[in-house]
Amino acid sequence: MKSNAISPGSWSTASFGGSPDTSPVELSSLGDHLGLCKNPRGHLFALRCAAETLRGFMLARLVTTSVVIVLLIGLATMVV
Image (cartoon, rainbow, N blue to C red; front, side):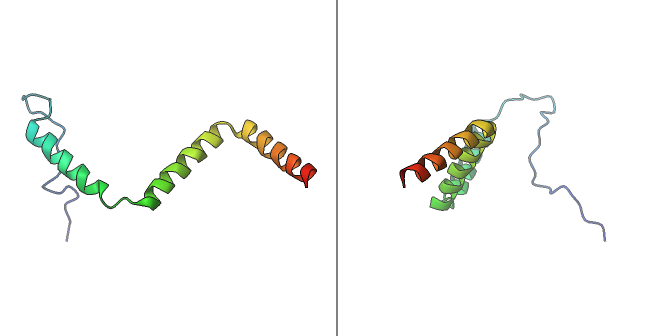
């Protein structure tokens, strides 16, 4: 049995000769959907977003971050 890969309720990006802008009904539906998707996000989601942001910051500055970490470790060993 062959299954259909495209669901019949999928979004279409074609305007078919009509206005390519989004309609108020579509914007309202999208707003409702985003509101529903936002609810399950909790503290762990915020923590994960912060961790991903920090990781991206550190990866973009890998050498500088490594030098700062080594200096902090060296300073901590000198103080103790």
